[in-house]
Image (cartoon, rainbow over all chains, first blue to last red; front, side, top):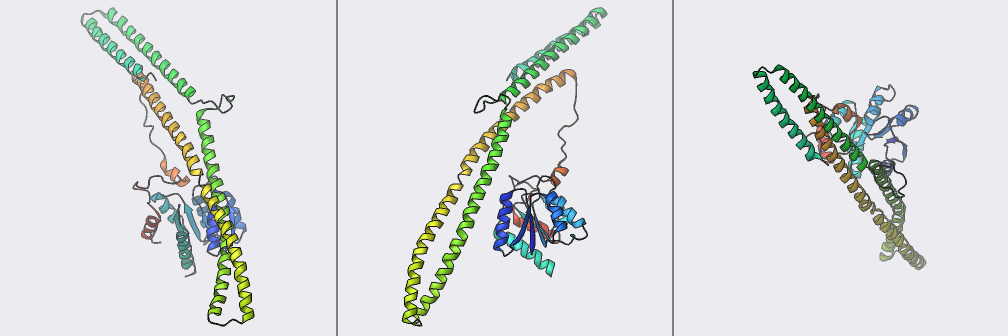
Length: 124
Length: 260
């Protein structure tokens, strides 16, 4: 499974990458904001997107909206991993079609649980 | 910063105006129209004078505030380097330090994990063979081989434990960023509070001018927060606020209430 990790902080990308590797997902790529991520998603065969919300250029929520509008990408599972913790924002993300929402700081167990849940639902 | 003077100035201005108004009424009642007109002109002049004084004070306070934001740089050469710029630099330093510490920690963890994996795998293999020995399933030749393996393992265990130890203390030391960045952040916080106080004083001074000129402003406090939320706000420092979730459980509850 090919996963794209989008976050403007390289350390956070590295943490997520390490956690994903521990969960057995070794095929990961990275992007530092929505603007770089979108063409990668359009040109690559990614199976899963993990994105932050607050990024310069294109934010995670905008990226999510673009993904849902794209005919080929619209069913791509998207997990938002972000420090954004306002109720309105979580509702907005849900309405934009996010598949899971993890607030930072998070644990490896929470990340695993959300990823498992997403794929349970996608495959089920 | 001359705030008291300003208030006194305004009060004095107020009293003078009151006295003159009384005098004006007296003059009008005494049919001294010319005297009244002269008095009105005088009142105008007084107001203008007061206004000039207030604007002057505001300008001086502004200038002082701006001047106070300047600090000596390390070299003491770059005079245009303000305290605000220094604060931005300091915060960039915090970002740099935290990134460095995070990367260092992750380097050491990534280095340590395979060492531990090797130790674990070797210990497991030896344990299996040791159990065989206890069940008397080993030939004398196999046993000799096992003792050799145990000797090698003990030596590698010592070496590997030493590397793990050294990596762990490196990880421990990498946490010193908290102290250093904490100090920097506290300095910047102090500066921000100081700036806020100065701005409040300036706003109070500007308020006197508004009173003298009879100006009123639209509500400047209206902020477009809707758009900000979609841009992203960043970590919530205070999660006790009603519209902020207090953690992952709260997020899960909210999402499940939305049918997730």
